[in-house]
Amino acid sequence: MRKDQSRALRGRDIVCFSHDWTGDPLSKTHLMRVLSRENRILWVNALPNRMPTAASKDISRIAKKLRSFAEPVREAEPNIFVLNPLVIPAYGSEAIVALNRKLLIRQIRRAMRRLGFENVVNMVFNPAAGLVAGHLGESELIYYCVDEYTAFTGVAAGLKEIEEDLFRRADVVVVSAEKLLESKREFNANTHLIRHGTDWQHFRKAVDGGLEMPADIADLPRPIIGFHGLIADWVDLDLVKKIAEHFSTGSVVLVGKTTIEAEQKAKELAAVPNVHFLGRKPYGDLPKYCAAFDVAINPFVINELTLAANPLKVREYLAAGLPVVSTDIPEVRVLADVLIGADDENIIARIEEALANPKPRAAVSDAIRHESWEAKVDELRAILEERKG
Image (cartoon, rainbow, N blue to C red):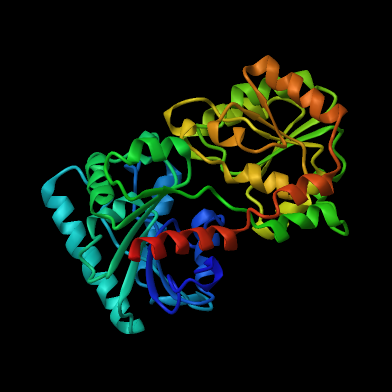
């Protein structure tokens, strides 16, 4: 059977546990948008993976979660219905786990009844949803693991055990990186690798022209060395500082939200005159910023978390036709048009190389065109069809 004729994940009701729908579009968002063309989706907003702190951002987030709990399930996009669950942000004791499980099952089953969901596929992107996986009357359980979640800073106690149980009980496990495939197959033999796709048509706008230059970048000295994405503690801001100091007559631009863990280093970096933190921008505006960049960077630190990461931004940069320079992340090595640096000095040399000898942007973009999210959904359907025999 050809992939595009696959019956898997067509005409189904899917419960999806992921990040907050209003957050930046991630791999989960793109996959669900493709699947929503032929299925109904109950998108369950984020369950906490880490313990909250006393920081103002965490307090604000908790308050927002409590307010949103009172909101009814809403149809955010055609066939995508969003539920805001109430859960205690802790998993360290059996009593709290049991209470969370009871709360979540009640909320999700109520939403499923209201929507008339039947023969449900449970597609989990958030390991904390292992609390209720298998307790919702679902006919299939898929764990789509895109990160080494237990390597995140401040991870909640007990999450490791919940995730390992989820791996074992899933009918199918999908991972987004080779390193995850190697480590997760020990829990479930039915584990498969599907690397990330890209929203190619969206980022291709940066190549095709006609985009208005954003005002906050239009007058910056060149070259513009750009980054977009979450500015977290896995982003090597010390390296970014060295880049800025080396290219002191140019500009380093960072587009994205800064996490609590990265705030202090971000403040120090912001003191460098040619570094510009522009904050989070709407997804629809990202091609405009990419079009203004002369080179894009993926300056990840090298640790347990990033060695298993598949940075979506790199494929987005490529779809926008940009020269790309990255630290040595395994999943970036498979992308032909990315220059990889072994250390800080080598990264800077690679940026110099990218600026001096850029490939035609249309050619760089064309080379990633086949890595669409539709193609990734086809890969998933093929895996499910093969399992059914």
